[in-house]
Every structure is written in C-alpha cells, then in structure tokens.
Length: 413
Ligand code: NAD
Image (cartoon, rainbow, N blue to C red; front, side):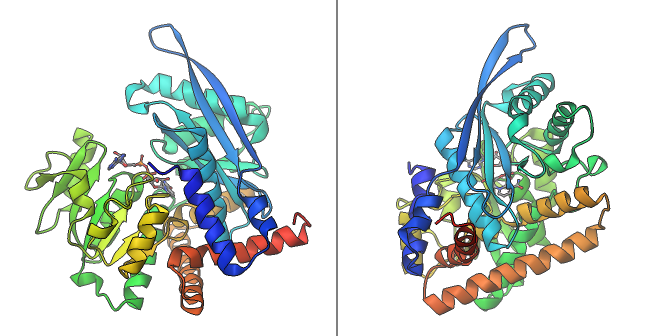
C-alpha cells in the first residue's frame, strides 16, 4: 500500500517542477513544521486504565493558524496524520483560506468504546494538546469517526484549560447550539456536489441523465449521495466498512440512510444486491465518489474504472500511479484538495462567526460556499487548460501560487 506521506510529497514535487519553483519551496513544504505524539490514559468502564496513542500534525502556519480534522481509527499512523495535514495546507490554499494545514488522529476503534470511554478519550486528547491548540494557533474539526458531539466535548475540555471561559473558536464542526455553523454537517458533500456540477458542465454531461457510485456512506458520502439524488442522479451503489450494495435501477438514498442509521451498515438494504468493495469501484457509472479512506484507486484497479468523473470526497483515495493511468484514459479526477474543500470552507465560516459572535442563516452559508467552490473550481480548471496538466496538478499550482508568495514575503525561502 502506498504511504500517504510519499503520495503527497510526490504530488507536491510534481507541481513544483511544472511551476519551475526553486527547490527551497519543496524543502520548506515537504514535511510538517511540527508533529506531536501524545499518550492518553483513559479510565475504561471495567475500572482498568488503557493508554491510547494520538498525534497532532501542524504542517505550516505560513498563511495563518493550522486547521484540520481529528480522526479516530485503528489504522491511524503518524505518517498518515502528517500527510493529511499537508493536504489540508494545499486545500486551504486552493480555496484561498487564511489557514495552514493541521490534522490529528487517535489510534482506536471508536465502535468498540462506550459513550463514556469515548468522551474520556476525546477530553484526554484535547487536555494533553491544549497548549498547542487555539483559535489563533491550531483549530481542529471532525474527520473519520468523529462528530459534532465529540467536538462539543473537546471544546468544553479546552475551555476548562482556559479558566472555564468558553473558547468556541478553538474547534469547528460543533453542534449549532454551541457555536456551530448552519450547513457545516453537509458542507464537505455540498462543496463536492458543486464541484461535480461544475465539472459536468465543462464536460457537457447532464446530471439528470447520470449515475453515481459512492464508496464510504458516512458524513461525506451519504450527504453527497443525497445531494446528487436531489439533482436526479441515480445512485447505483454505496458501501461502508462492512460491505457494498447495488441496484441497477438506483438506490433510494433516504431509505438507505435510515437503514444505515438503524442497522449500522448499508448491508442488507431491501431491494439491493450485495457486491464486493472492489466491484463497486469499477461499476459502469458517470460519477465515482470515493468518500472513505486513502489508497482506494491504485494501479491495480485504475485501468478498470469506468466513471467519466471521479470526485474525491475522501482525502488521498487515488495513488499517483493510478492518477497517471486515469489521466491517460481522459477520466477527470476532481482532486481531494478541491473536491472536499467545502468542509474546511464552512469550518472557516464557523470560526469567523465565533470570532464575531454573529451567526449567519443556512441560506447565507450555502450562497457563500457555492461562490467559494465555484471560484476555486474555475481557477483550477483555467490552470489546467493553460498548462495542459491534470486537475490535481492544477489545484496544487493555484495553491502554491499563494503559498509561494507568503513564503517569499516572510523570507522563509
Ligand atoms: P465518516 O466516519 O463519517 O464516514 C466514513 C465512512 O467510510 C463510514 O461509513 C465507514 O464505514 C466507511 N468506510 C471505512 N472504511 C471503508 C472501506 N474500506 N470501504 C468502504 N467504506 C469504508 O467520515 P467522513 O467524515 O465522511 O470522512 C470520509 C472521508 O472524507 C475521509 O477521507 C475524510 O478525511 C474526508 N473528509 C471529511 C471531511 C468532513 O468534514 N467530515 C472533510 C474533508 C474530507
């Protein structure tokens, strides 16, 4: 399996080469400024204490405070967290946010923890990292297997470390009642849907006559399925960590969401056929949305992918080797740093609203997100046309233009 850190470094190097940037830019950006490893002792329900390992990586604060989610997953590694923090930097750059990249992770299986254990772990993680986080320093958010409840515990714990004074701006993806933003829940998928619509227009594809396949029916994937279905796209298949379901006539997304909520998986959904996770990726469809984890589209399966558009709701789902194969086959890959930027855009809006203490309507957030995604998509598409490069390289180039200027002005290169 391709190491995520190697993947992001290769992508960065490729963009630096096309842009003819001096070697120093790559040197400064090829690794995070800081990556902390922490040990979190948690009192378990059976009375024993278990220590969990966690990480927080801060890639660069050249453009502003670091920003990025916290992942709870058994496969979290330091290198993965470092890579994810780097993708966050380039993502913030491509959509023009005043942030650098951050990312956190805890090696654990949250599905095997009780609510009490999950709360103590979440609070323990923040307590031990509190001195390295802050609204003007590093601002976490949800990622795989973390949600708004976990963000609420973390904000509460961080506030305790600041004399009990509420610190809403330290974390985003919070519940609305605790300083969350309207639209944050579905923001990643909404941004992804806007990018898909823009790409479809450029490619003369009619969404109402299109089909889509969703890998990873979680926050990003399920919301994306719902939004695409609202535009009359037929959702042919969806998967989660337990399995994949398919229907040639299209799945009823609302019913599938209810089924997953009540049973914990998409598996066994009425009227659907069970397929393997590998089959799902190579189904005949217009749009493929990988919305699970890294390393899903590789040199092993890239030649068999039949979608016209791949919209990376997940971070790092496509390896550089697969990218080359897809590019040669004229498959348009909307890269993660653009396709899933809606999440951090609305996180930014949440942070701005927290600083102001003035909150926007769902319509206002939606409108601002649509404009931001549209501008970022167009800038990336124009770069692609101008330089004759894949969309991913183009997105890096848009981002690196901004980063390069900041690095020069700060005399870091
Ligand atoms: P989530 O925990 O809500 O959902 C993840 C889903 O993926 C779950 O349904 C899980 O069962 C499924 N899954 C896990 N392993 C799988 C596998 N091998 N095959 C198929 N499905 C699998 O997480 P999320 O927040 O939706 O994040 C998903 C991806 O989107 C991640 O790459 C994350 O970094 C990225 N992302 C999320 C956000 C956000 O705001 N939540 C923002 C940007 C990017």
